[in-house]
Length: 227
Image 1 (cartoon, rainbow, N blue to C red):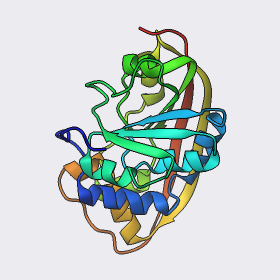
Image 2 (cartoon, rainbow, N blue to C red):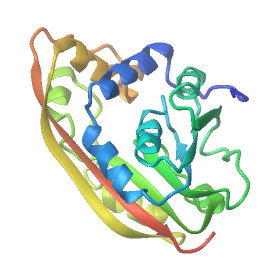
Image 3 (tube, helix red, strand yellow):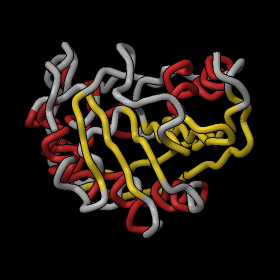
Image 4 (tube, helix red, strand yellow):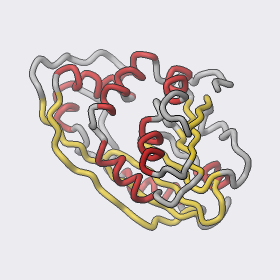
């Protein structure tokens, strides 16, 4: 299901292809393992800003009783997400403009490296529902950022997320993935192109493999009130 116009900074087809190759290489497999553990009891799951739907699809693999909906502002990404899993649907939607779901429609919301709208997340969750937010730590892909000039990462992101969600959500768990990965030049290029750095100036192409740090924190929130 398409249903809306893409946003100004929506992922392009090239970005979607790069993200697909990066994630299928296992770059964020550790994050997927945490998501599966934290949402093992969920049955109706929304991933907001889902991109290709990779993370939701892996979660549905791990939780056979669950179904999912992926939303994103990119038509190219939603077309990919719509084919990512048989128990998953996908629709173009802007998280800031409002999610195309009735109140209390899902028992879990997943947000991986994507915009967060506290009030909308609270609205679509059932009482007792959970929000899981994955965000990069300052040293995430630091070696690649230094080599290519990628956009930096906010140092106090976790604290900012907790503050932004307060009033509707309370943090109940905090997990960290930190591991080393060796990227080929092609995968390194994909890691640059899959994110917001792709919207900016061109970046140098590496000619040798590079060892990078994967550093991601996953914060699980419980819904406490609708705003």
